[in-house]
Length: 454
View 1 (cartoon, rainbow, N blue to C red):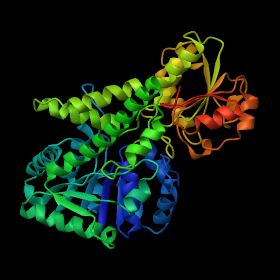
View 2 (cartoon, helix red, strand yellow; view 1 turned 90 degrees about the vertical axis):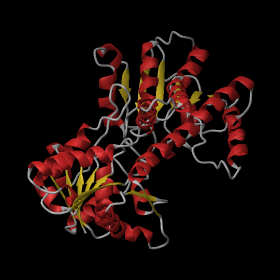
View 3 (cartoon, rainbow, N blue to C red; view 1 turned 120 degrees about the horizontal axis):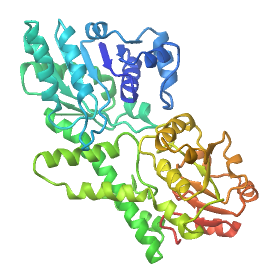
View 4 (cartoon, rainbow, N blue to C red; view 1 turned 120 degrees about the vertical axis):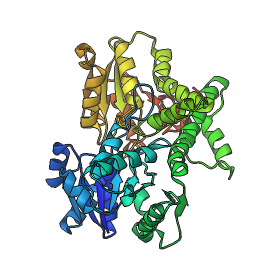
């Protein structure tokens, strides 16, 4: 099938590459010429395991192309995926200007029937806005509005495992309208996703608004579990319980399960913070407060300061002259995404107290440099207190303590003899509970986890 992907960012690239892998002819378009230049020269502007190899394979086979030519992209695809960004607006709602702009471009250039697929994470009612934008452009050209049908097909991709999630989905959600055009679109989508349903049917068909809400509901539920566990971990610290034992005790309940029950420094990234806020905003627009979600958001923001509070409790509020090694900058492992990353808050707070920070991350150092430049904009003195190193062990040299923020696999079993030799004092603040407190005590390491007998 001929497919166009509008937007060559995270969702667009993964969607385009994976659909090309199934034999479709995919045209990816983006308004950013630098991004397209990178892709056409063999690079990939984001880090995602397995994505670069898949793009190379399908470009070589002629099934995947990248361009800035909007007219050509509209002419190409019978199915047009809108996968542009929906950044948070100042009031917390999703900014739909790029989605609507993409829709208008489709309406300006289309001449044959198209299925328009909202792949971006968008609030309920966005499909109506997309349909209106396209219809207005078609009417200007004297063309009928039923040339297109708008479908909601939200993505459920975990950063760091997005290719695997797309190729082996646990569910595919498709929202269509019960109209002749909607039924034709449903059949087109069924054919497109048929290769992913060969083992068993994974597709859930529903109306458009339900599909739009499903995406937000899923992310909000996962974010709620994270904030809930962080609240319990903080309580465990106060009462002397071990949150790891609690996690095992409640996770073994089949009604609860173990997923997203790991306490830490709070969630980040491009999805959970934005989607929780946008869902709450949507509810307020309809006269309803989602009090649980407002609490989830508040707990998450506070959680980003937890490690700093533990450091302050141990060393005092004045950290001048102290040096901290920090392992992990990205908001989660297997990505270079620094959006809403807890490491940004932790670094700023340590610097504010006078400390120096030497940071290491396996893949996010370049993105982190850009992010920190924004965070310390107007404060070059503060930025000068932060440095990065290409080796995790060298970050420890003469540091007063190690702070672990992201649970990269390489951090799970370090050479603790080296860790102890390089640190001024063997002290670890573990924001991901990678190590057992008893084992650290045996080694002579002063250890502070999240909810683990601190």
